[in-house]
Amino acid sequence: MAKRLNNQSTVGDVLKQIIQVNKLQSGMDGINVKEAWQNLMGNGVNSYTRNVVLKGSTLYVELTSSVLREELSHGKSKIVAMINEELRRDVVKDVVLR
Image (tube, rainbow, N blue to C red; front, side):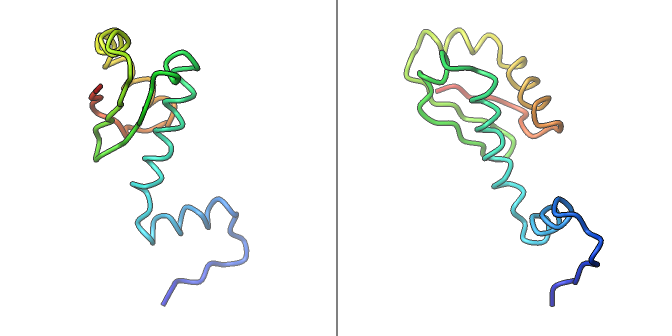
């Protein structure tokens, strides 16, 4: 049976507990990483981005431009740092550009 919360809990606390109890954190991380990519990269890169998927701690980004893929490959560590900073915790450890 589910644990009943006291009436003093905030909505944020209740949502955090629901996510934890139902083991939804990995799905939430995937959504948050996708949003962080869109916010950090801007319209220029997003127009060439086909798909962004988080599997485990690896971020897979599918790009339609080989030139952009080559340019971004030089800054993989910076991309990882920027996304983790945006999310305020270490979610991404590696980026694979396809």
